[in-house]
Length: 387
Image (cartoon, rainbow, N blue to C red; front, top):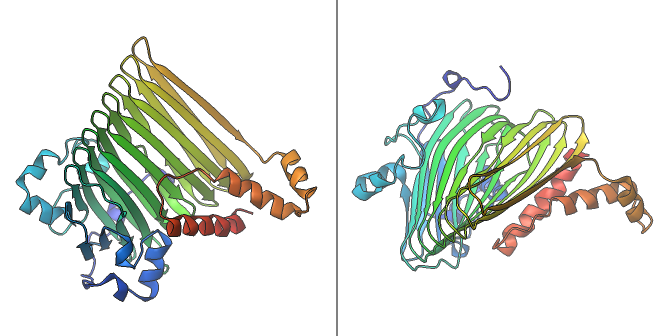
């Protein structure tokens, strides 16, 4: 079976019930270390809300900001009948094998996050989906609703326990950004060398709304296949950044589709990819469906060790008056850059590390200083594996 294929029957749907943790500060040991690695802060004062799921158990859910709702998806559907109007509306239930495998039931995970009209969260909200059981199939359905003129930054970490050899994560995420609202969504993933990941994500951004997505995957993963779709209405904006590293044995088929449906809509897709023995298929597709829309797609990749880096930039214009552009580059580190830095006192290894770190330095808007520092440290650690 190739890395992009999946046999759902190989994985178990059953896991033990994990104990609920009342206080984030009481999370210790390996769990704390694994959560921190993907941006989860155990200091509750630095976050407006927290949701943590371990296997199929919600082990912590809390909030400190009025106007924010956060809870497990099954409980939310019981509490809020109106939430059914959002369920499976952006992604059809029968879209493919992954969506057909997902049914929202009490024993299944995922979250609902809502922020009320006009509420502007000054601190990020954080979520973590963690797999601890060997050969477990973690299934989640997430719904996020950001009401008119509200602002929210979600830091979403996904991880596995260090002892875990193999696992599966499949999920559906439906994000609704209402008129004039802003949603920043930063994903930091640390899955594991034999973990298969199949997320399905769709985002709808209403008039003058803003959606900013940052995806970071620096560590080995068995395979991940994702191609989220973002739909922009009149005057809406999307900025989608990804930072990908594929070491030996890693397979990534990562993309992003943006449909510019309303006049004045703007989109930017920026991808940085490094192949160090693995495979990265980097996709991007801008679809101009209305006059007066603008979009730019940029995909740049470095190959440090034998592998595959396949860049697939696409532009589709369906009416006069659209403005879209793309640039793609795949190659190696320029020897002249190395020589330039060595002439200024760095040895060859230091010069290469400096170039790689600069290449991966895509500015991520709105990150808390502590998280930005952790990501920088993770990049430095990743350099050792890449070299």
